[in-house]
Image (cartoon, rainbow, N blue to C red; front, side, top):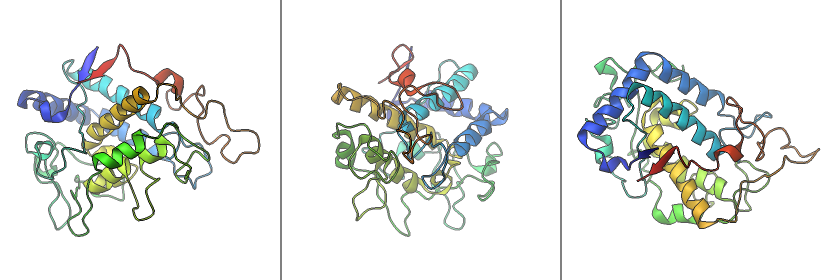
Length: 287
């Protein structure tokens, strides 16, 4: 079993090992295959097909498996590496250590949002974006969106989601207004005065490549989603009697039948069920 650490506690050597392993996966083509997978399973509500990665109950177990697959590849490069997590309720500055030259690099320049610092800067020659043709070939960010400022989620906004004892509610999508931890944490169920909360708001705060289906083009994606995974853990501990919903597929005639994953249905592309991913004992722990 290995440990996923808070990124702020990493030593400079650990940061270097993590970024070196990520760069190696990019070099051999493995990284871009992960970006394509995420893009393929980024299916919005309005599409009348299966939604497995987003806007659906399987948001948490699908991303847990996705991170595990990526981590397995990282650890094949360097067995001492794991995905760190970024607590975006406390580490909220665009100039925090997360965005330093020795780790993820900083925000994009004003003219074209191109990231100019750190190991993933296009000019270093190791990070050409190949997935997501509408975007540029260089990594883009716009931390905090200075021209139209947005703040990272607050501890209170996160707690608002974690306090909900119900995992998810019908119609099991981004429009679910009757509560539900999943939709509140994923961030669609924001109060009317806000467009996004929590997970979604973090993607918007980073900006650039992080705002679409090819978000994993930015390595910050993995640290963001490791924290989302940790939050799922916290919710399970707080509500031990509350399980994954829907426990069974929606009934015949329900418009969501065949479009959302129930507890014991397989999630593509891995053919594992949410039940199999309700915990991670024996695999990793959070420090």
